Amino acid sequence: METVHKIGRRKTAVARVYLSEGKGNITVNKKDLNNYLTTPTLQYKVRQPLMLTENLESYDIKVNVYGGGVTGQAEAIRLAITRALVSINEEYRAVLKPEGLLTRDPRMVERKKFGQKKARKKFQFSKR
Image (cartoon, rainbow, N blue to C red; front, top):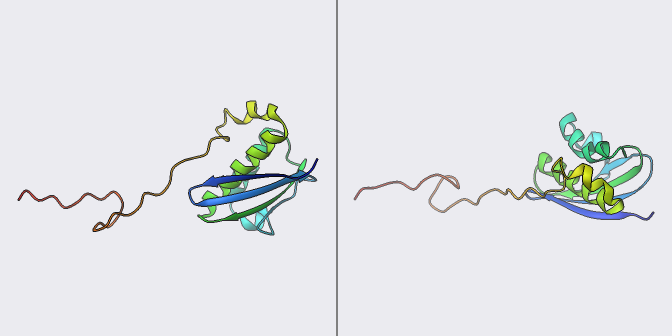
C-alpha cells in the first residue's frame, strides 16, 4: 500500500494527512501528537476514527496543519483521517457515517459589519 493523501477543513484550519501502513505513529507538523495537542480531549478527537475502525496501531500518519485554533485544527485532522480510512476501505463508511465524522462542519465566523462592535450587534434604533 502506498501513501494516501487527504485534506480536512474546519473553520479556517486546513489539515493535510498522509496515511501509510505502520505502527500507529501520529506526527503533526513534525511533532508527536501528544506534544502538539496537549489536552486529552483533542488527542481523543484525532484518534476517534482510528479507534472506531480498530486501526489504532495499523497506520502511520503524517499531518501538516495550518490556520485556525487548536480545536479547529484537531477537528480538521479528524475529518482528513476519516476520509483517508474510507478511501482505503469503503466498509468503514458504515461505522464512521453514523458518528458524523464524514460531515464537513460548514460553520464559519461571521464577518464584522462596519459601524458595529461585532457581527450580530443591532444597529442603533431611532424613531426620528
